[in-house]
Amino acid sequence: MKMTHTRLLVSNYNDCFIFYRDIMEFAVVWGDENGIYADFDVNGHRLALFGKAPMAEAIGAESPKLKSEQQDDVCLIFAVEDVDGTYDSLKRKGVIPINKPHDQKEWRIRCFHFRDPAGNLIEINKELGMSG
Image (cartoon, rainbow, N blue to C red; front, side, top):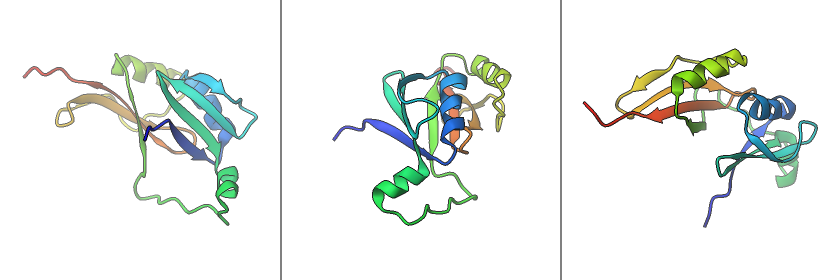
């Protein structure tokens, strides 16, 4: 078995497409902002967007499940070379961070978090050195 994609099911496809293309600067492999499905290349991994309603229709679901507002179900993790520089760049593009870059020593990473237009949690991180 081989995992090929991470597919986000979103109710605001257009906003999410623009976010991943223009803010995150992921290369579009397939689709556009006017569709219901798109694939992005994220350094060799495919991140896909698909409308919630078309996915529900495809599997014969009567209505989408309600999403819990208490805890997140998924967190997309992206490694970068410069956490603080990425934080500054994304803030300039209008991203509203949940927290500032900080060291999570027990996880051995420096990171910060924010959400995409559909509310999906995103973590930007870099592994900390092994010193100390």
